[in-house]
Amino acid sequence: MVNTSLRRASTLLLVTIAFLVGCSSSPPISNRGQMGESELSFYVEDDQAYVSGVLDSSLPQQLTQLIKSHPNVTDLVLVDIPGSLDQAATIEGARMIRRLGLNTHIARTGYVLSGGVDLFLGGVKRTIGPGAGVGVHSWYDAKEWGSEVNLADPVHASYVNFYLAMGVPERFYWFTLNAAPSERVYFLSPEEFYDYELVTD
Image 1 (cartoon, rainbow, N blue to C red):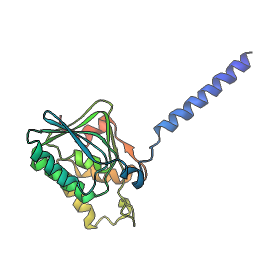
Image 2 (image 1 turned 180 degrees about the horizontal axis):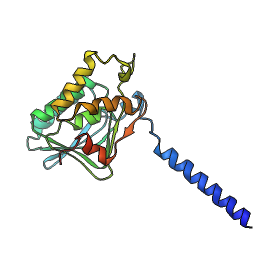
Image 3 (image 1 turned 45 degrees about the vertical axis):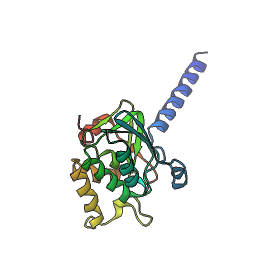
Image 4 (image 1 turned 90 degrees about the horizontal axis):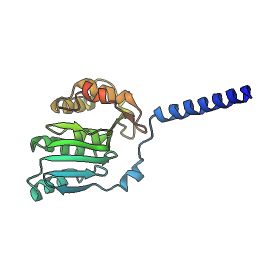
């Protein structure tokens, strides 16, 4: 009887450990086809614009139209941003947010992944709600991983200059290259939000 109880307890312990280990691994991010199904959308309520969906080439135009139609908007609330299909448009959108003096906030239990993080960094003031997820990984341009590109390649400087302009230390860029490969995502801890100066408050 004692041996049976011990055996059951051991089995339960192993199952629990296996479950916890499984939860700690980085989940795969959506592939391009799945991401394409999540259309970029905006919903305005008072002075806040709620943003959801995949960032694409229409982002700068949509932001421009948003402010023209709702000049009272002061804050962009990012609800669920699974990534970007056009990094150049995402960077342009982030710089536009900064020029317009808008703030960014990741909704409570919301998430931003990959290029969504870059958009978030455009905010003059940046805050993250409780339980929100911020996921990063190395970029991949269909030929090579960002972490494999020669350190002297100008592509690195373009990213570093963007982060510095947004008030984020250069080391954050190098961290993202090694945090996870492009098909997976690493979720930052609340401590890392502050360590990498992603939040301003």
